[in-house]
Length: 84
Image 1 (cartoon, rainbow, N blue to C red):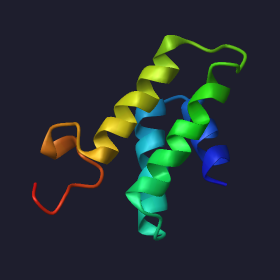
Image 2: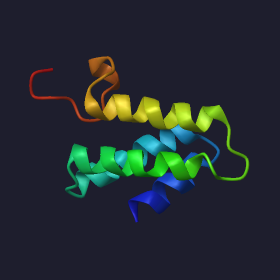
Image 3: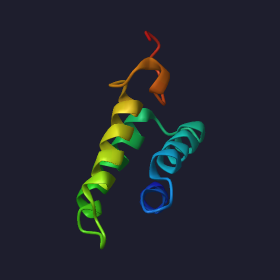
Image 4: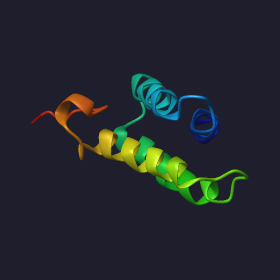
């Protein structure tokens, strides 16, 4: 289900906001950040094969992974660490 939701968000009118919403929903539903990050990694190869693929799509996913795993400014993180 998460892959379907991420793919739909990626191809919608506002991918950054839609992707962040999917991630927040998954975290709120009890998925661990590692599970969500794994889903993003699983999605990336198939995204490259989608009709209409652009580098922006990949950039959205990479940026989202950074926000999820803490490789972003603390204010931009989707799942801040206990240390931050």
